[in-house]
Image (cartoon, rainbow, N blue to C red):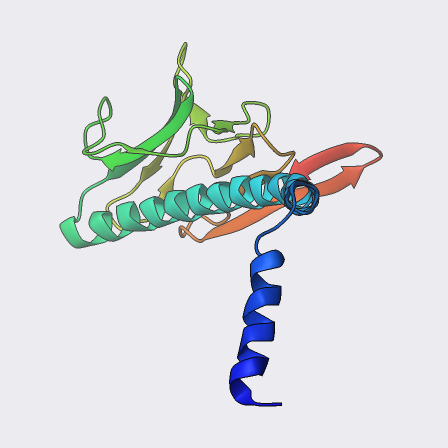
Length: 182
């Protein structure tokens, strides 16, 4: 058989079987829909946990920045964190009433008021920690606990020594059915 005749056979067969049937398209779209339904909740959980971890890292970094500024400038600084509407915001500054610059978290994160042990400003959803002129903690040690509103996760930043050592923790089982962040 010659090449030209083989080419005609394949071209003729190709014209008759071109495209997909409606049934084939519906099956492919159904499979894609099922895969998306399985993947989206896992992705949302991953994303919410990542946002919580990022906020935890940023808060710890701000505390360390406040310690550094206190040491360099040889003056006390104050770390303030608050629940401001539907976001958590924090800042550092020398003025007790207003931080230099506020930084905010993502919208699905809030402060766990039952487990946050920094000193609280009366009648406000604000907690603070005073850093002495050498970066050490003046007064009470404590922690700030963040919770995600979309997944059942907790993260905390703990001021664990008077010298100003900070560490990060997450939700752990304490007793029967009770959890704490440490």
